[in-house]
Length: 100
Image 1 (tube, rainbow, N blue to C red):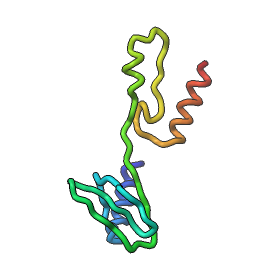
Image 2: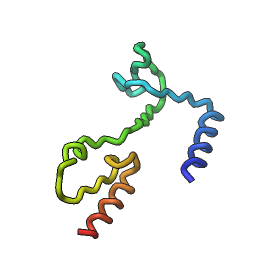
Image 3: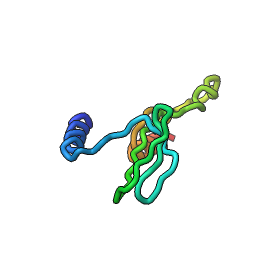
């Protein structure tokens, strides 16, 4: 259950005093930190042993609109359909490949 996994992860992060920084734009990455911009202010985080970046994604599918008048069959899969992971996208592609 993804919701249970997320809840446990957030709990562990809180227990370990991990600060989550969202809606920020990374401007520069260093071996010990990063510069970022959030709410119009440029900030810097330095002096860390590790730098871990997790980037949210949004579904991106401009081609479907361009093909709205296409007479053939159109299947939208992977992140174009909804944000997922690579394994799911490969699986969806394999299923469609079997239909051909």
